[in-house]
Amino acid sequence: MEKIARSKRAILFFIILFLGLRSPQLAVANKPDSKQGEERIARAIEVIKELTSLKEEGIPISLLKKAEGLAIIPGVVKAAWGLGGQYGKGLAVAKMPDGRWSNPLFINLAGGSLGFQAGVQKADVVLVFKRRRSVEELAGNKITLGTDLSVAAGPVGRSAEASTDLELEAEIYSYSKSKGLFAGISLKGSTIKLAKDANKGFYGPDINPEKILTEMLKAPEAAEELRQTLRELVKNTN
Image 1 (cartoon, rainbow, N blue to C red):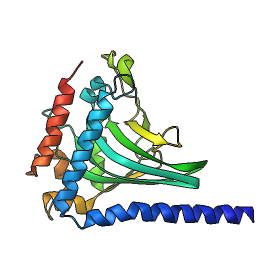
Image 2 (image 1 turned 90 degrees about the horizontal axis):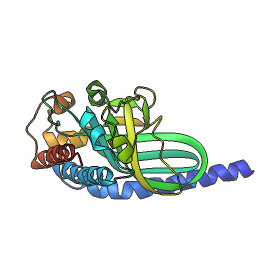
Image 3 (image 1 turned 120 degrees about the vertical axis):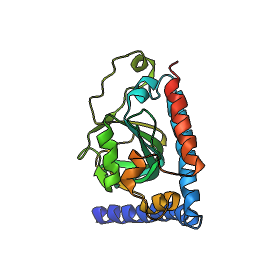
Image 4 (image 1 turned 90 degrees about the vertical axis):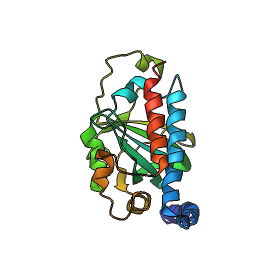
């Protein structure tokens, strides 16, 4: 009986969580598609600036300079009550052969987990990609973190910054800034999928996702604002 009661509580919890997540999404769905992309970019700029500004626990600029790609996913919601799940909307960019950053490819993150913790956590997440090929795989519609690509917590702070020969041992280094009942956030087992509607709304209905990361396509001004932000951060070696 106790197991049944726990199961009912878990189901009720996720129904409430689902409704809470869907309400703002429905409101956003009424906005022009290009505006959705611009809002994702604006939030991504806020997140990357904040996570690189934390001197003792932020993303080292030296690591950012060596990165071949980034995924920035603001406000990932993770919840657990015996069972767990997480969801977030964000974008990815790749470093092009000439050193410039690509236009943003819009993505969604989703996943589930098993555990014994109870609570809800919201975290801003940044994934730093070691290889360009890895970030380009995001254009193929779906990857699973920890299975298709290895992921590990990234080095932080000035001690990592001081290392000029910093080597990445995983395919992806993850960073997050969060508050809640969880001590941290695990992304292993989560999937990253293309946000097809967001990409079509931002670039046009005939967009090829692979070209977003490999060619400098015509895009709204917000895309250049993101690239400019990343250029400035990489130049900041202090």
